[in-house]
Image (cartoon, rainbow, N blue to C red; front, side, top):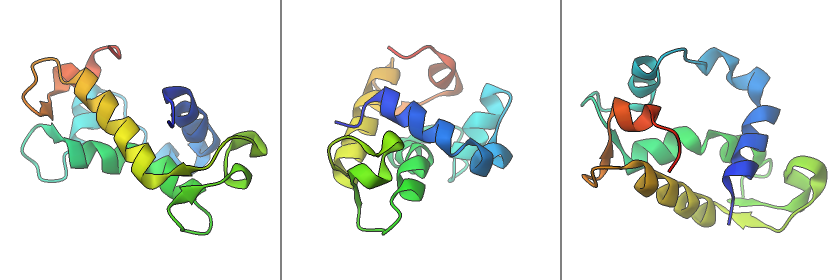
Length: 112
């Protein structure tokens, strides 16, 4: 499974490319992720935002991150489906009230 550590490493490698997407407050973060403007984050919005690193690391666009595409050139192949499921599990943990959406408060909360 694509762990939170792997995601953090991927984002760290892509930091120069995503610096323009940097946000400084939870409200800004929610606004950037909230593509339909309803004031909350659905799973698909979360996966799209958090999947940015995967998409940019997948050099050959085959939906798989192979060792040569991973930080350090090591690790097992990770599929886009596995990555999305990992993100879905993180989303469910953050969704404290279980309503299927993330509020600004849930986004700002430490990972559970």
